Length: 184
Image (cartoon, rainbow, N blue to C red; front, side):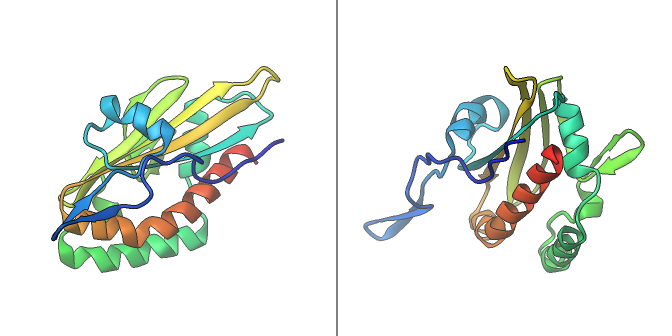
C-alpha cells in the first residue's frame, strides 16, 4: 500500500492577501485540481487544496466517502464541538444545521450534491462562505485506486476569510486523517 498525504505541491499564489496601495486585495490560493474543478463545481472559489492517497484495493467514490466521513475520530468530534460553540453566536451553521445526507442508514455531515462511481461532491453554503468537497476515486493499473479529495472554498466576506484562516490548520489535519481512513 502506498499512502501520500499533503496538499498539492503547486499553488497559484504565494499568499492569500496582497497589499496594493492602501487597499488589501484577496488573491486566489488554489491547488491545480482546484483550478480545474472550480469553474464547474463552485464558480468564484478563491481557495482549494487537494489531498491524495493510493490504496491497493479497487473502490469507488461512494465507498471512499463512507470510509472517510461516516464516523469521525474522537479528536475530530471534539474539534467540531468546539467549532460549533464558537460559530453559533455569529449565526453560522453548526453540525446539526448542515443538511447532511443519509448514506447506508448513517449520517454524513455534509449534503451529497452529486454522486457517480468515480466522483462524489459534498458541500454546504452559509452566509460567510460556500464550500465543496470533491472526492475522486480512479483505478490504477496495478488494481488499486488513486483517491483524491479537493476542497473548494468561496468566501463571501471578511468573516469568511477569517474563518478560513482560523480553521485551515485543523482542516489539513482532519483531511489527512480522513484520507488515511480511506486507504487503511
